[in-house]
Image (cartoon, rainbow, N blue to C red; front, side, top):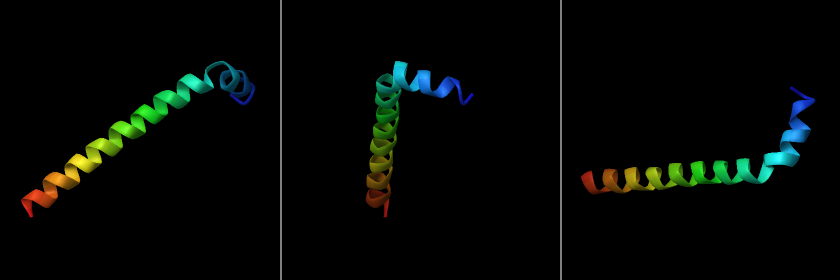
Length: 42
């Protein structure tokens, strides 16, 4: 696993980072929507 990481980091770091950022952004948007609906219900 340790030998695999450096080559993976060189090959697909941008792609993985972009995918991770998209995932975090989706989660953040869902969290905001949930907070808004909870505030509306209260």
